[in-house]
View 1 (cartoon, rainbow, N blue to C red):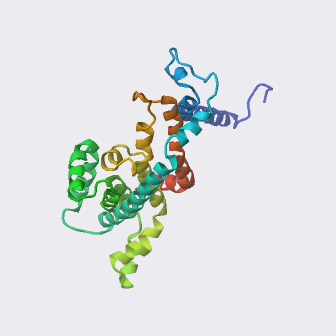
View 2: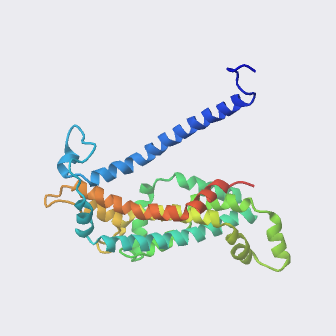
View 3: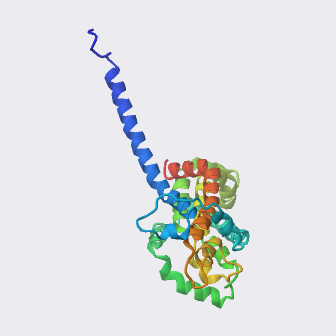
Length: 287
């Protein structure tokens, strides 16, 4: 072997390192792409209104305005609106996760005429935009006297969500048939089978569904704006509607600072539940 020749196994190792370097480069680029908007939001919250309106764009604040976050927190009842958002998100996320699990269990493990047709209709309902059902939804809850209450989110939670039903259906369909057969032999009904056997094993999908539903409710602007008064409204509505001047012009730097604080709870929920979330999304549908 000459001094310039390579060991027999060096070529595959070099190829692996190059592939890994390319992969890491792509991942870093995608990470920057996803984090970029949030980073710009943070920088916007540290600027004054003149810098935000400047042209050409000022990428970095000339003088960091840390007091924007304190001002955004104290100018409105920030904790009160956050409490309202948390109550609504917890109610909806808990109920819709359990109801979607129950419906998904039925589609996965029970046999009935027209089951595939009903499941197709359920999946097809995901293509309906929220704006189409907005007016009928408001009229129904107005007739029932549930406007300016949290009852609409209770009913929405009990009604299950098509996408979450799909996740649970795919997960439950992959569990061994012997589990329920053994339980039936022992005298268990399907209710007991669901609560004591299938539901405890579905913690990855439970975590993923709870995080998804919590994010839906926490980030919803239209329903709280339509159904709730100012006192019971959510943080999403407050951030977009209350930081204005006497002339009605939005104070964009305070909106940006408040938006950063508004996003933090969602990040914390995901960080706490990310292991179950990733496991649920990666194992759903696998036999």
